[in-house]
Length: 80
Image 1: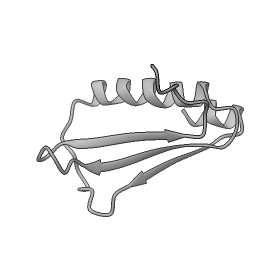
Image 2 (image 1 turned 90 degrees about the vertical axis):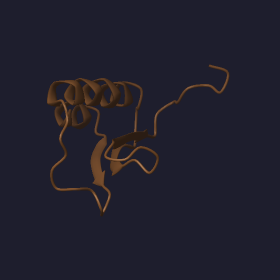
Image 3 (image 1 turned 90 degrees about the horizontal axis):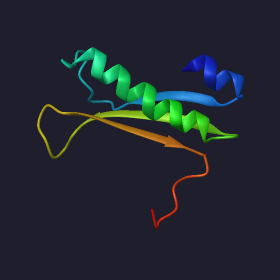
C-alpha cells in the first residue's frame, strides 16, 4: 500500500497502541484482505494529506484486535 500512497504523495502511517501485544493470533489472509480493502479505499478517496491505521486491542471484546483507518479524504456523507 506504500507504493499507492507514495504515488499520490500521501503519508501512510501505522500507529500501534502502546499496550498492543507483540504477537496477535489471527487469520493472516483475512487480515490482509481487510487491510488492503480499507487502506486501499482510503488512499483512493484521499487527494492530499494522510492515511493512518491505528491498531489496538478492543475494550469491549477480550482478545480482539481493533483496526481503525483514518484519512483526510472526502469522507462519507452522514445520510449514507
